[in-house]
Length: 183
Ligand SMILES: [Zn+2]
Image (cartoon, rainbow, N blue to C red; front, side):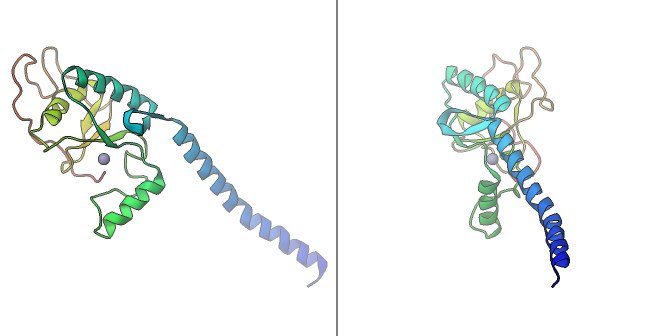
């Protein structure tokens, strides 16, 4: 091969490979920027800073009512979500969304220990109070999965809790909510 031809070949190769390398850099930088918006919540987990602040306020108030909000999962990296999603696809794990489709990847979802589910004291407390902090359920089959969606979560009316029950009346078991997404 002649020298000029070789040179042009090299130029062409660089032109072809550079955008791919650049795109990868952008992806890595974006992932790092996202991770830097995550802050620690109790139990060593992380959430988006806005969600974390609301969650810690909610936890403090729950504690005053004698409820402990224990976290089992909050922010997940794409890699962690990918692992869970693959387990789910193989039938080896619980339902998990595709990487990027879960609000856990955005630091806006938190999984909590709710005991036996819809009638446990912790669940009932969340059902009656979480909306005041911008949290609500989004997955019908997962009473432990709560998401921070302050804009689309209506606040209760004065004197009522999140289910419209008067605040001074003993609370009945809460009805099941919601749509069916994967978390
Ligand atoms: Zn979840």
